[in-house]
Image (cartoon, rainbow, N blue to C red; front, side, top):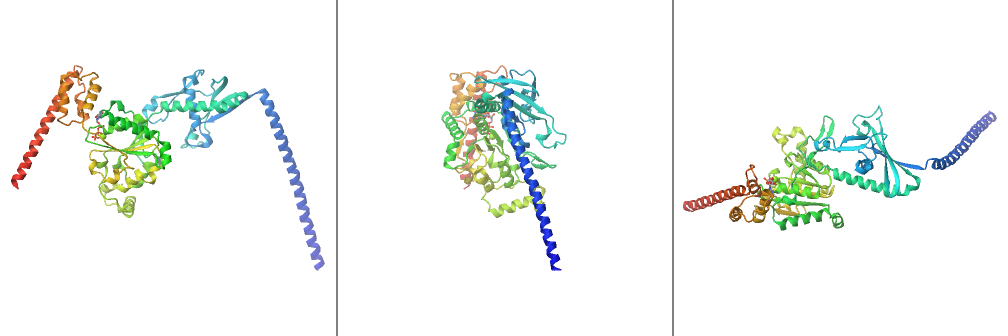
Amino acid sequence: MNVFAGYSSLSQLWVVTSVVAVCWTMVWKNLEHIRLQQYFARNFNRRARRLAAIVDPFLSVTFEEYEGGRIKSSDAYKEVRSYLTTASGVRGVRHLRAETGGERDNAADREKLVLSMVHGEEVADAFHGATVWWSAYSVAPPRDAIPWYPSSRSDRRSYKLEFHESDRDLVLGSYLQHVRRQGRAVMVQNRQRRLYTNISRSGYDDGWYQDVWTHVPFTHPKTFDKLAMDPAKKKEIIDDLNMFKNGKDYYNRIGKPWKRGYLLYGPPGTGKSTMVAAMANYLDYDVYDLELTSVKTNTDLRKLLIETKSKSIMVFEDIDCSLDLTGKRKTKEEEEEEEDDEEDPRRRPNKQDTNKSKVTLSGLLNFIDGLWSACGEERLIVFTTNHVEKLDPALIRTGRMDKKIDMSYCDLDSLSFLAKLHLDEDVQGHQLFGAAKALLQEVDMVPVDVGEHLTRKTVDDDAGSCLARLVTALEKAKEEAAAKTTEAAKAEDDGKGDN
Ligand SMILES: Nc1ncnc2c1ncn2[C@@H]1O[C@H](COP(=O)(O)OP(=O)(O)OP(=O)(O)O)[C@@H](O)[C@H]1O
Ligand SMILES: [Mg+2]
């Protein structure tokens, strides 16, 4: 019985060995085959390339609008497109395509037309003795395109650059750099600055994500040369802005986030908001006008911060009225409890409370100078207030508000400045101007009022009538001030008498 069992195991072993041997031979043969194929293919390709170079010595580079299925269009594509929209770029193109520029959701951008080559057009360009050719391609989106995915919804567009092999180094090196640089310059030139606000549809709405900021084009015309203030003070502010704008290395070296806080304080109508516009125009920055009372929680405040771009000014207008920022900082537990209340509808006592902002002083302090404040760079934070004395010292300490600017009543320099600005003539020798100067030394008037009196109201208005209006207003203000002083003195006397 054992003899038969041994025989059976030997035959099994033989079968297994044979199968392994056959398989190995087959694999080896195929490996050889594959290797041979690869060898021939490589050799063939090399020879084909050499042949192609003789027959067609041209190379090409393609710039696709959406690289590798990204949602955001490629920077290189946009730079090439901008380059080709320049006069030199489109000179040789016979058929142009006109599109609305940039963002399609604002009127100013819609008005701008971007001219580009239509599908199949070709244009030649010259660079340091080399000639290159650009052509535009456009392929219809696939039928199974995902509707909400921008890169799959529209035509797949690309630009192809062709050049002779002998210009390879020149084109791939300097020419492409030149195209990108020029393209970027055109984009900056056409860039529309924006004024953002957080009073918007925010978060998820009907299942679609909405931006936390909405924007309009920033078109405020005020510049520093139209702003009345002490010339030395104005120069100091401009110098400070210049140092900030060019301070990237400095901020890096000292390990500080590249941001700076400005506190503008003074009576209503002294030009605080106007100063923000002048700053934005001077620095060429966007403006984020943050309405703090519309921000529900500290977490929402952080979300807003994360969604802001660099090269921007974030403004908190009338910060003293925004929230109760005069109180003490709350403990972390108190804050968390408040945020929980906000998130849990059952713990909201009534509708009125629901809409009330739960942003706390410490939330705001962290927003301005905490860890999160370092996200993004090259950002100014500006507070404006009529009542600087009401603000918590922590909020305006150096590091949060680095530069404090007192925007005050109109002085003699500002009066001369505003007269020249509004009347467009030299009135220094005018008798009424002398009278206005004398009165302004006795009574306070804010620049907005001085400017208003000096504004021509009818076509018959001239410098004389405008100055007369200003003098009358100053005299009236002087009388009112005198009456107030008398009244106050009388009240004081009455008080003493009662005592
Ligand atoms: N210093 C100034 N130079 C030139 N124009 C000024 C100046 N100050 C105010 N104005 C003009 O007065 C108007 C109101 O100014 P602005 O809104 O900047 O005042 P404000 O200080 O922000 O007032 P508020 O505290 O009420 O917000 C603007 O149209 C502005 O052009
Ligand atoms: Mg203002």
